[in-house]
Image 1 (cartoon, rainbow, N blue to C red):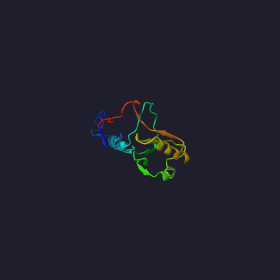
Image 2 (spheres, one colour):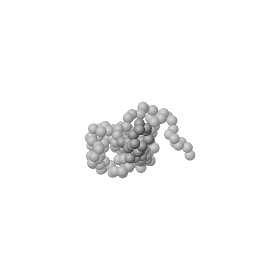
Image 3 (cartoon, helix red, strand yellow):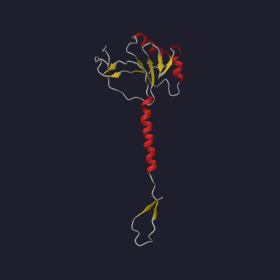
Image 4 (cartoon, rainbow, N blue to C red):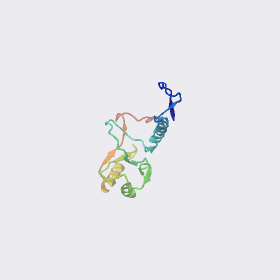
Length: 152
């Protein structure tokens, strides 16, 4: 409850109540939520150790919940950060609640993955009905070495 110290033009000298909303607790809650989202946002990204090649293509807008299929240097597959066997790839993609055949699959492959293996995974996707595939690369000049590459 608040009070007003304004002049009451001769009315009784008691303090009168004000009927304004106190927004301080609301602001405190908003600031706490902001901090929580700022801390949680970086944790929702895919973090597999894959050395992606660079590309000079312009960056495109990323969808809200992209589905990343990664080919690791040891030629194992992972959807997001979850490993998956090649024989179970299409079944696992079909089982994802936010995945459909008309959505893009973002394919990430390490630099050391042979071209034939990359094409084999793309053929698996095509045979399962996933024909919308985007290849993921790092931004940069195609001839420039990646950060830390080429150093002993």
